[in-house]
Image (cartoon, rainbow, N blue to C red; front, side, top):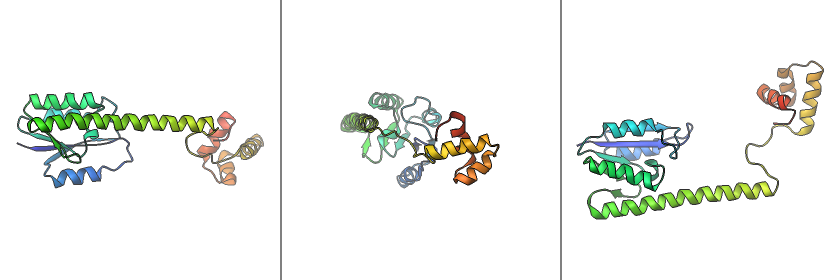
Length: 187
């Protein structure tokens, strides 16, 4: 019997150290990872390799239930497949495991709540973006230059001044200069 872990973060710049430490603390012997992979995608090479590696008697351990599956149905399908292969499942944060009828029932309930939480978060985000758009605000990073600086940059370019020099004058990167010169708007 081996205790095998799986860890996932959604973006490449996120850190999975918290998950790895928690998995180590509960005695996980090997951890499979997916870095920069959204839970909503079905293409997760680390999870696929983990599931292939597991053998009867092993226990798959995750830091939190939402690290495992795309939605409630996917989590329950994966756990059912594990159970049919004689493999246990454990989620550290929620204190869930597949040992016994109560553990399986709690897993089903918690998976449903995890899905509800994710759906609610998406709903709130969409509502916030819609409200911001209704008030004339766009999401994203604030513009580095205003329309006056963009016009000034176009004028300097028309006089033959290099983009590198324009960038220094405006205090922005050369890429920013190219971006707003290319489409005629401030970036």
